Image (cartoon, rainbow, N blue to C red; front, side):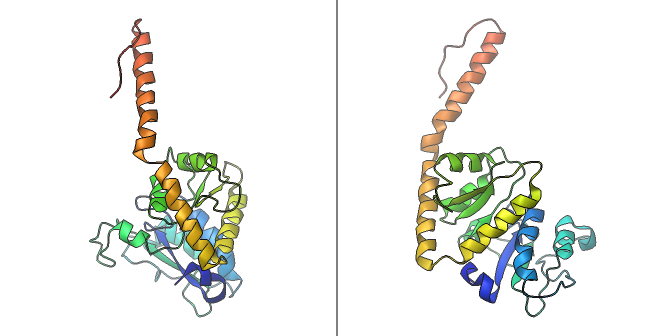
Length: 241
C-alpha cells in the first residue's frame, strides 16, 4: 500500500531487517516505533499489541527488545489502526521461507526507507537505498548522513533524495518528533513530486560511486603508511595503488 495513503487509509511499514532498520541491524528501531506511533494513536485508543506482526518465530518474543518496544507503543492490527507494523527478524537472502526474495528485491518495492542510526561510521543501508532510487531518512550520526548533508541537503526536504535528522546524546525525543513529521510530510507528496525525489536519490548515489571515492581511500592509506614510517624515523615516498 502506497505510503502516500498513510494518513487517510493506513500503511504497512516494514520494520526489523527489511527497510526500516536495515538488512543487517535493528539499530534505531525504538526511534522508528515512537516516530510512527502518533499517527496510529490519532485514529484509535491505545490497544494491546500481540506478536502477530512478526513473520518469523522468535525464541523468546516476550523478551525481544524490538517486539517489547512495539508492544509498549500500543501497535496492533485492530480495526481502525492506521499504521501496521511488519517485523521481519530474518536475514533476507532469498531463502527466509516467507518472502523468499533477496533484500534488494524487496527494497525496490518501498516508497521510503528509514535508518535512524545512533552511530554509523558510514552507513551503507541508506546509501544502498538511494542507489535503488528509494528516498531515505538517516541521521547526522552516520557518515553517509554527514556526507549527504554536505551535498546540499537542507535546501528543502529531500532536496537530494535524503533527509538527515539531527541526533545527539540529548535530543532523542526531538529526533523522534522530527522523523514523524518527515514521514507525514512525505506521505502527503504528490506522485509527481515523489518521482522527482526518486530521481534525485539515484543521482546522489552516483556521486558516491567508487570512481569518486577511491581516491579518498587511497589518500587515507597513504597518510597511514606515511605516519607509520615517521614512527620508524624515515618518510614514506611510495604510492598506494
